[in-house]
Length: 89
Image (cartoon, rainbow, N blue to C red; front, side, top):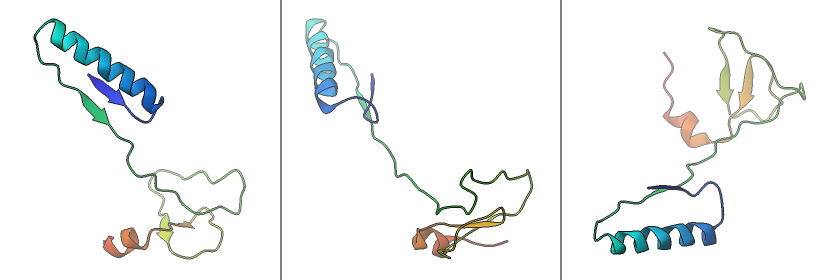
């Protein structure tokens, strides 16, 4: 079973796990349970156009640390560790 912890409450997950373990014991058969945890949410800065920008396939678009409002060519990525680890071809 896969329990998605991005949705629902902890109480719901506890109830589901209890039910799974009861069935496991009833049938004397082990049941694997995977707890699917939400990963990090990376957000970009704001755009000058409140509706955002539409990018074209193949277009060059830059993620940087500049706090200025973004446009169709660039936007702030407030994660300096990602910028530092990036390589430019």
